[in-house]
Structure formats: structure tokens, C-alpha cells
Length: 120
Image (cartoon, rainbow, N blue to C red):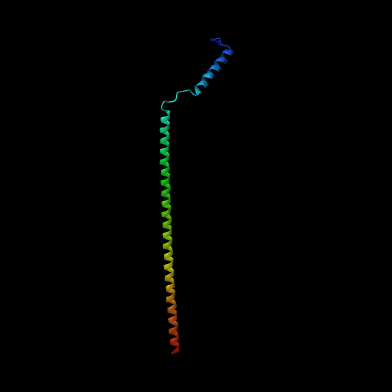
């Protein structure tokens, strides 16, 4: 194939270098003038961020409070169930002791009755 443009090796190298420069120039940051109300816009954005921070902090505080209340309620329920369990054990022990006392009295009465029966 014939070279129609009659370009030499150095011409091709030069064209390649220019193309590379043009490609790199696209990625360089462009100088631009700042907006006239940049300070006002920045202040507005900072105010919005601060408000959002406050809202999030309030939400976190509310969650912590709810968690603490739930924990307190759970502890109170556990304490009450423990007290009920202890009261049930006490009542059972008292009934058992009462039964034992009645049994002792019945045995004693039986002994006295047997003694009286022997003495006659």
C-alpha cells in the first residue's frame, strides 16, 4: 500500500505527541470563577449540616432513653418474678412445716393413747 500523505516517521511521532497532549489536557482541572454568592451558599450548607447533626443526635438520645427504659422495665419484671417465686417457696415451706407439726402432734397423741391403753 502506498503512503498517500507522504508522512515520515518523525511526522507520525509529532502527531502522536500532540494527540497525547490533547488527551491529557482534557483531564486537567479547568480554572473557573467562583460563584458570587459562594459564602452565602456555604453558610447555608453548613447550617443544614448542623441541623441534620442535631436531629441525628436527638434521635440517638431518644433511642438510648428508650433502651434504658426497656432495660429498667425488664429488670423490674425480673425482680417481681423473683419476689413471687420467693413468696411461693416460703408459702410451700410454711405449709410443709405446718404439716410436719400436725404429723408430730398426731404421733404424740398416738403414743399417749397407747400408753394409757397399756396402763389399764
